[in-house]
Image (tube, rainbow, N blue to C red; front, side):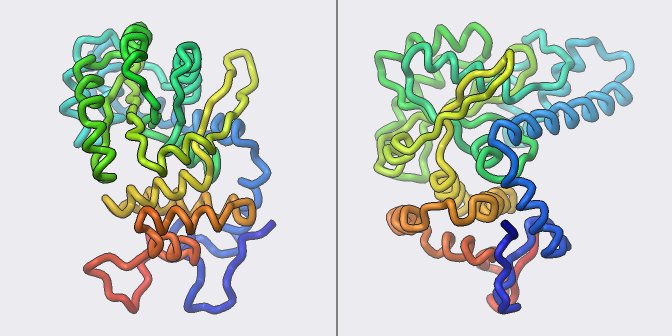
Length: 312
């Protein structure tokens, strides 16, 4: 099915990529609809591996005398954003990191199996969920929401410690922030963990129990990933991924978030539950953002001329 392009030129869908002709984008969307979620995750994994190989080649060229450990550390730090690097540096510096491409899909499956083994409810959200429901792309990290009971904290700490580096006190602090997160959606009770082999970042958010998060868990979808290293992943639904990304966009406008939303809306199209989207958009005070997204237009920002539509 081709992308629906409005005939009114004043409301043309904004292209997912700058200067992409409408007929090319329609073909891309049609192709994406033919891919299974598992296939898109595998393609995204391959993109991550390619990016790591290229980054590693650049590091080796700049630092030809670097040891394997130094190369692994430099690659891990390069994956992080400037804001993430100071904290990441603290936890990564003493690890014997390997200079090898990371496999985010294998990591996500590993964590999913760990959590399932202890019956800790979880959802994979963020960029990985966006790949499942939209277009495949690289990801800098894996975002997971946990419904963590106090009685499961010790088991979580013990299991994570086997393959990840983190500060246990960060989990305690995240639990202490839950009441604040429940009262104010802009606050998050979260902590970071890093894979001990590659330094890849895992962002773990604790569910505060607010109504939208309860709905997210109720509507989570289980994906079967086949193959020798396969398994299952519990992923947020397409609608909940759109809503969560619009909330993040409201907090910190980002072209990456908006593109993810647009890709999900166009790939999923008529399969989306629009009544659910509008119901929760009203509850979350993001109805205006949802309507712009459904029209395929980027909302004006405070310094924008309202007569102009911004392009990515």
